[in-house]
Length: 387
Image (cartoon, rainbow, N blue to C red; front, side):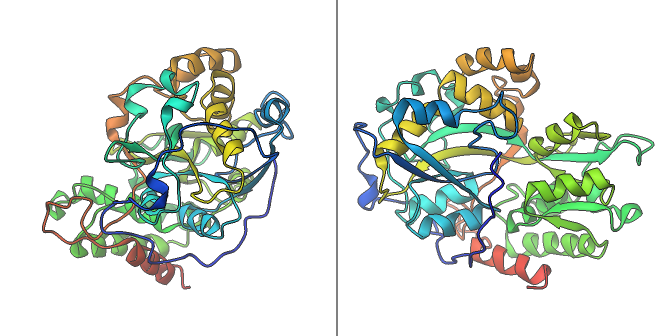
């Protein structure tokens, strides 16, 4: 794995439209893939472009480079806000974007529409991963799926007499003050809102990403109480791995990637999807609207839907593969992977709240209710963190 330094950029605010309209110069779908330009510059979630440096069994970059002649340069982002800022710089050809970034990128005409017919592997993708609201507008696609997964509750089994089943282990975690691990991003406000959705139904929270001011204030209050328990905030997944491995933290929110790597090293770590459900992601490979190397990016998008590459990537990260063919290929890497990750279980994903962009319109143009915006989420998180 390429341990690249995550650039520190000022998060660009004001990129959130009240509704995702798109319609600018990037709205004309790219209809064909031409000759590769020799280079591909990506913004990625860490672990999304492996070249075998950590484990030779997981390398989907080198085969792509050999086949296309496109040299891959990958820059990891700390969170979606950071990823949007990186794409704004104009230095990258594409991004692996979660739903709390995709809406912003489309509405701001920062990503190109694509004709999915140009991709050899798109037809195999599971039906419930196609044409999703976070990457499709008026029937126009702005990317292709990478994989999906839940944010997990992880704990040190040597520190818990009984395995936790609820997010209360984090949000009511006074017994583990100083030992709690929290994702350092404004999107974590949604995790608090989801907890309140289940524990305080009188608040009327329907969507943890679309919150009225009263609901938002309640979520911030929960986070202030959590902050008083002196949690350890993480942005780089390697930092969280180190803190679990050293025993500095014993419980917290995490990704499947960290759990896989910790367990592979023999750490006493287990993780679950709690009884309240959880937040999660359904990631999309998107091309920058003015990409310098568009053909290489389109080739990469198709490559990441191929059975071999998608199997490696989703097994490595601990995500659900995107097609039956990828599941078949994944079986050779990790027996039972797709069953364990609910890859073809559409009902399972109904209880996973994919990361989404908070919008003033509450993501419903017909609803007169006003919700707290993405900018306000970032500002509140910055205040909470003492920034």
